[in-house]
Length: 165
Image (cartoon, rainbow, N blue to C red):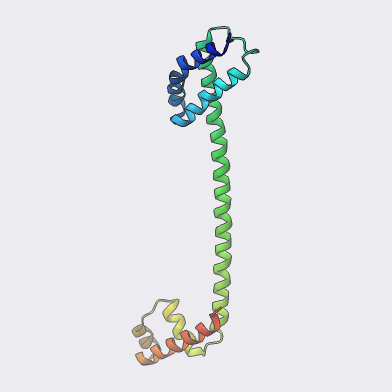
């Protein structure tokens, strides 16, 4: 294929830039294109004694670059699919862990709510879980606004001490 190093060097100098441009049109990535072209030249040098060029060196080099660029795209597609799968599994695992954590917190809160006095618990649930205002709770339970505040303060104090871990 090459008579000597000088022939190889000249072929490299003649075709390197045109091959990089060609590979870049396929890959849309200049650095990857350069890597592909370098791989083609390395392969040609390593196998210079066994490669048989039939239709001229230019056709051989461009065809080799084309094939290597397509091989690169396939490998990137496989890597991307593997990365997406790993990312999905990580998200799925994180979601499962978060759901478990939230479930455990809710269970702890429910257990702690059982320790509240009944009226305190009722006012707390109406305000924190049902979203009622102090005034709405006072009206619905026919109690003073200050009583609603006191029940909520008492509930928060008890829950803080039970859930402080």
